[in-house]
Structure formats: C-alpha cells, structure tokens
Image (cartoon, rainbow, N blue to C red):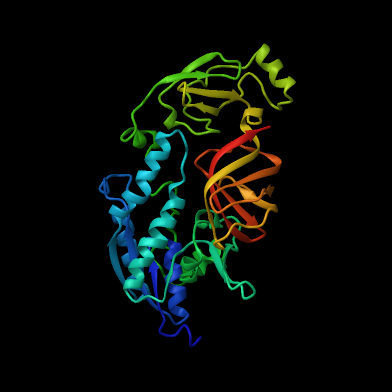
Length: 384
C-alpha cells in the first residue's frame, strides 16, 4: 500500500451507477478512507416516472453497504437550478442548443460538490468518469487525458475543469475499459453490476424532450422553408429544434423530385432520392423561420470553420496556434483542425475536412493527442 494513500480521505460521488460504485471500491482497495456522497440535483418532479433520483439513491446506499463505506445524501438542487438550468433555458430561448452536462460538471460536480467534500476534510474527490489526470513534471501542470476506453471517453464533458479542480480529483475507472468495470462489479457482488447506463440530460431523463421544454419556453410557430425558399410546413418554435435534427419535423411526407433531384445532383450530393430525409440546416431568429434541406451531405449542413466563445483552458492559458484536433459534438472522432491565435475568451478553428451540423451552443473541444486542452461554446460556423 502506498503510504501516501493510506489514511487519505477521498469523497466519491456515488450516483447509483456501476462506474461510481467500482470507483469507490477501487479506492478503498488502494488504502484510501472512502466516503460516498449522493448528489441530488433536481427535485421539481422527482416522484415522476421519468426521474430516477429516488431509485438511484437506494442503489447508491446498497453499494455503500456492500463496500463498507458511509454515504451522505446532499441536495444541490438550488445550486443546479441557478447555475445550470437557468443557463440551459437562456440558451434554448436564444435559439442555441446548450450542453448542460458540461456546465453541471464545471459548476456542480467539481465546484459545489468539491467545496462540500473539502469541508468534510477530504484530501481528494473522485467520480466515475472515463478520463484521466496526469501531473506533467516538466510543466508542473495537471493534464486532463482521455479515458483508456475510446468508446466511453468522457473528457469532452470535463474540458472546463481547471488546474485546482484536477489537482483534487481522481478518475479510477478512466484507466479501465467498461467491460472490466462490469466484470469487477459482478465479481465483488455489487447490486448494480448489470444496471443500465443512464442516458440523456439528468433533469429530463427518458421523457420526451419537447414536452419537457414546453413547460418553460413558449411556443412561437413559424414557417419551415427549404433551400429554394418554398414554405413546406410550420414549426412549433425555433427553440424546439437543433441543427442536424431529422426526427419530429412534420414534413416526412414530402418527396424530392424533378428540379429538386437535379439541383441535388448538381451539388454533387450522393443518395438523394424521392424519400431522402429532411434535416434542420438553419434557424433564422429574426424572421422566425426554420430552414430545412434534403440529404445528409447537403452543403448547408457542412462547415469548414467555426468561432467559439466563453473559452476554458485546462492549463489556464490558451494553447499555441497550429495543428490540433477537435470534437464539435461528443459522439464523433477527433477531426484534424488548425487553431488560429487564441485568447483566454475565444478562438477560431479551420478544419481539414468539412464538419457536419456544427451547432451554436454546443462545445468545440480541442485535443493534442490524448490530452484534452479545453474548449469553448460554438458561436458561429462558416459553411463550405
């Protein structure tokens, strides 16, 4: 046992899921004094069929019992509503598509939770995220690295963490593949070993997204137009759509034919036929118009460059200009790009290959190999 670890107190965020459960077990095996904390971040309708908070706490408590650690139930709902949900509504009302999970990590899990843990005398905190932290002895800085499992890496959601937060954080499962985490959980008899991974935004759960948003944002119907300027339907409000969206447009019965097919062929689009799906391509807030196009590779859906604001750099300073890689959405491969000289607040990227449905409000996150450098909120993109 590492003498440094023996007796060190680590507070683990126990969510009720298998990743945080194995995180707590691994740390206890390594000789840490482990305390579990269950964070309640949403309580407006936690007795509904869509909110699993109560079930998750029961699972987290059962895990703590098996591992043999204490667990505390902490309510961060007020902080969450002020710091995360209010910003979520502001962004949607402005026609952008935010990523509240990124803000939740920066403001709740690694701020409110970290502060609470330090008040409990914690030396470190830990979560079940698939990422890693490395102390670079040459620079003296802490680096945020991708998780070893490429299919589960969550560094994209953690890119706003700073040096102080990383210095106080452990990500044990970031060194493992998901299959190993499941295997460990089964071997040690954790009650949630086979529990399904949670998906979606934490306060929305599995409920229909538009139904949820409709509670807080008024509908303002307007025209849906195609790339030839023809009105082909009506939208329920621009806030309820995102770029690249294919489902729920209400225009599925329209077919491409005649001049539309010829125009698509002239643009070099592949696979455009009578039943080619429609995609949201642009949102014109000034005229309350939703613009849609047919075909996944329509030029309106492709961007060569983007600008981002509200930047956050892991090292505390912007990286040097030059070739890097970036993600403009979580589930995508790293895309080669060139970073123009950046500031602490904003930056511009130019991509080697056109990027699909670059969406204002989402995050552009930069990488140098396995090192996550930080990122910012996409403000605008430049079409091909």
